[in-house]
Length: 258
Image (cartoon, rainbow, N blue to C red; front, side, top):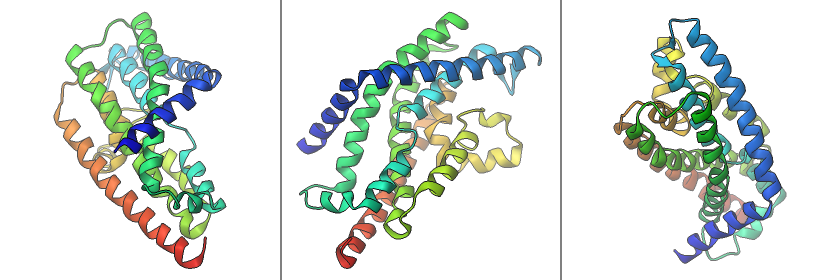
């Protein structure tokens, strides 16, 4: 698996080499987190100090973590991967003696780690300044592997969705729908506890919660290690689905000639 480690390092170096983009990402992240948390803290203040069981402090750490989990990846990954498939770039990658999906995931992991090395300290500093230390240190500790599992599940799921470009040549509609599902059913903008009961139950059994809600829930002070098992399960499922989609797509390219 030396190729995997090499691809991870390559992805990280690519991101650090374009450090202005990292600075812009951090600035955008801080603006978004500041705006959203300010609104939620105001809502908590107007509702006896909490919203759906979350205090203002818990909501701030929740949203800082959920936003970092999502913005750690390229925001338009589905569209970008879809464009590579439609343009034929993936066809040339088939000439490599390694998995096309594997090398892409490894590279994205490296890029994500580089982004997180900037976003996480920025988010933690913002939370400490605005609301103080995390509600529960153990929850924050559990959030570390949860963020990594969230990124892995997210990128695998996005590649599975982008794989439809092997057949329809356009992933833009898939990207648009995916982002909206993550925003709401994934718990990126609101904790799932805020949703109506029926919608919340639906969200809890879908993979989108594993990419934002789980690490955010842990960071907000809820010490629930069983959520890591849910994430691990979804990372395996999405990995299998993405592998099957890419394998079928690659066979199609080989049959029809790209």
